[in-house]
Structures are given as structure tokens and as C-alpha cells.
Length: 239
Length: 193
Image (cartoon, rainbow over all chains, first blue to last red; front, top):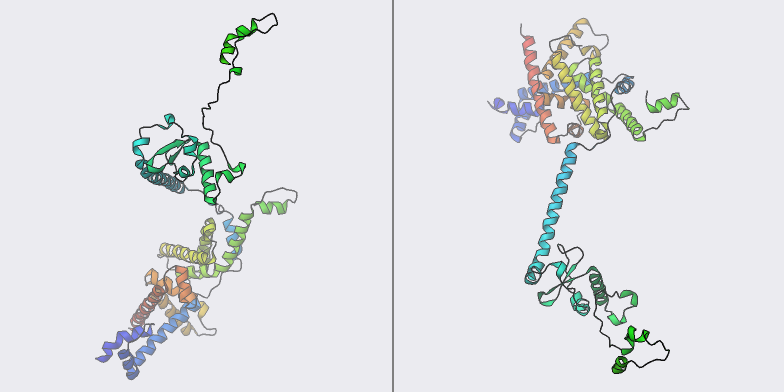
């Protein structure tokens, strides 16, 4: 009865499986099972020998040459090409990346715009007044230069304190950035070298005192004729 | 005639040679030399005809040549060749199954000077063995053949078939067990009057 119980474990062991402790003890003690085990092992050894002997053939000496001749009728291995599905996948990836970047850029700009929404949304960039030079170019304003994701390409948005938004020209933005750089270095504007200072081209109204000498009355001057300079009453009155 | 050969035959001929293609062909020739025995043995284990096995191996190499740029790595090439040669051999074997004239393997393994009776017994034993192998499922059959060809190097067989070593071991065990049982049955059948 115990031989029947361990038979499968013993034959499996002969085929290469591990054997449990009980079956191993039985195998060591039972002669018929030990003989069956040896017979099975011998049979498998013969199988291995037969297979090894039968498959020990080698290719003919001219086999490689025959293969070389045969492959000459075959078109050579093509160089890797861009398959249509690769192109399609690349196009899809490109579009997805573009949509993602657009969406991401829009989201980063919106909070800043919403902070100053009452002022900027009703004020189109083309009609906005450039900031005065002193205000735009001050270090305080320079600290609040915001990245412009969706602003007009020729203009940049400057966030001033209390959420005030000023639209400046690119040249003004460059000047602000330069001042910001100076501030980060701890250099005062007055101490900075001339090459570091870029004056923003803001239209200025220059008021100068009017001098009477700059005025002339052509009719009166041309009508003298005699070479004797006559007193012009208008000029005199201005003097 | 290829470009580089044309240049050899006509020294004055100006040809533009694709260096990459030449390098590829040299690598292919080396790969064929390294894997030819393996491919022939795998095919022979199925068709048991040397000429058929070499034809099958040659066809497998021709297919490999077409996509050799993807198979430049030697280990990958050998595994690919084994699988393609096996598949081609199985297809050929199925097509020729009705034709029973197969070369008997015993002629090569029989001892020299054996008597006619010994030769007949050896032939019968070998026929039984190959019949038992043919009756194994294909997966088990390929594993036991490759283990015999590779000297029971389970790691190498796993690499060739691109399967885990544990799978190779379990398939090898099942194949050996099935072979032993089938051979025992065949021996008992032949012993009956």
C-alpha cells in the first residue's frame, strides 16, 4: 500500500523533481521502489543519450556559403524607415503637447490677470497709456514685473502694488529688467555705469521757458528796405 | 553583382559603396556561422532528414537576413533563428506527415560491427523514442530538444526561448516524465505477442 502511495513521487523524482522526506525514506527502504526508480532513471538516461547522439549533427561545410548565395536573391535588410503609424503617433503626441502647454500657460497667467481684472479687462492694450517713466522705471515697479503669457506681444504687463496693472512697451520692460538687475546687485541707479542704463523711450512733454528772441515777425523784418533797423513795437513790448 | 564585387572585377569603375550595408553583411555572415549548427539541429529534430534540415535552416537565415537590422544582437539572433527554424520544420513535418519515408537516425549511432539483430533492435528502440517525442506537445518537445542540443544548459535554453528558467525546468520535467511513460507503454506493447 505504501509503495502505491509513493510511486508517483518516486517516478517524478526520477524525472528530475524533488522528493519529500517521507517518500525519500520509503525509497531508501523499499527494494522494488528503488529498482523502479533506477529503471526510470536508466530509461531517461538512454533518452538523453539518444537525443544527444541524434542531434549531434553539424551543418555541411558549405552551408554558410549556400546561405550567402541564397540571401543574394533576397532584398537586403531595409534601413529603418518612418512607418505611417510612427508618423501618426508623433503627430498625435505633438498636438497633445501643444494643447497641454497652451492649457498650462493659460492657467498660470489667469490668476494674475484676475487679481487686476477690473482695471485691465476693460482697458484694451492698444489704447492704454504708457506709464510715466518715473513710475514704470522705479525699482518698486520693477519688482513686480509679471510674466506675460497672453498679453499683447509688443507690450508687457507690470503689476504694481495694490494690484494696479500698467502696460509698458518692450523697451520700458527692458529698462525695468535692467533696473531689477541693478537692484539685485545692490547698485544704485546713480552709481551704475552708463552702459547699464537704458532710458525708456517714453514720449515726454518738455516745458521750457519761452524767450522773445526766438520769435520773429517775417513781414515786419522783410519790409525794412532802408537798411536802418526800425524798432518793432511787438518785439519791444515782449522785451 | 553587388557594388563592392563590381569594384573588384572592374578596377576602374567608380562605385559608391554603402559602408553600413557592408558591415551589416559581414555581421550577418558571422551570425550564420555561429548559429548554423544550432538551426540545423533544431530543424533535424523535427524532420530527421539532414537535407531537409539544412533547407529549413537556410530558409530561416534568409528570413533573418531581411530583418537583420533588428536582430544584430547575437543572443537575440540565435533565439530568433531557433524559433523560426522550429516553426518552419513543424510546418514541413506536418506537410510531409503522410509521407512516412523518413531517414532512420540509428545508422549514425549504431556501433560499428553490430549484427543484423542488434541493428534491428537498435532501430526499433530509436523509432520508439522518436515516436514518443513526436507525440509530446510542441512546447515540451522544443524544450527537451534544446536541452539535449545545449547540454542541459537551462539558462541558455531560457534565453533562446525568451521564457523564464523556471518555465524551462517545469517543461523539461513534464517532457521527461511524458517520454518515460510513453516509452514504457510502447515497450510493453511491443513485448506483447
